[in-house]
Image (cartoon, rainbow, N blue to C red; front, side, top):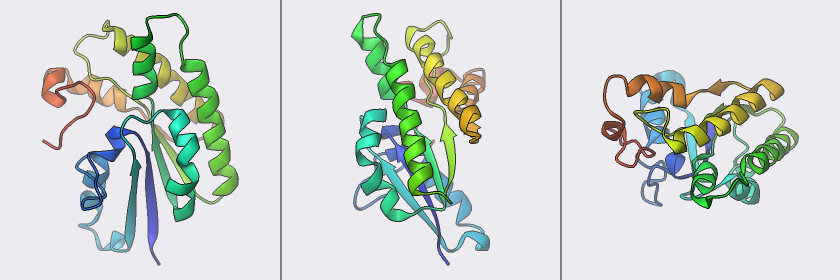
Length: 187
């Protein structure tokens, strides 16, 4: 029996995926490579449903065709950099954080209704920064709080990717992890 894991998100999830390389070169393909060395995961099917530039609203519009149709056993959701970046570039006090939270809540509810036996995992968005005082880092912190709060509310596991990169920049500067401080490479 095939075990299916779907990854749903933006360009960080996509990892430059193509029809020739559907898993891309990012964390989704690295995850698959780690597991395929074990016979226990020989029937694992990994689906990369990451799309460049997506926000939480985009995920709401495409959740059926890019996740539901696969009926995954596990669903991993990672979304938020584009939502936070839109706040960062808007130069207004009207933050998208509230909309992000409302739409993320809708998305979780839809998955729980339409895929009741699927285990859902949330990954926090992140911004790789040397200084926590960087404006985009500060905005991102609000989005991370939303994801952590939704994890608590819905009793879903949350992996804090921001915390991982906060520790990583203590060893090497942010630009060594990702030239744009957003899309880490496989190195």
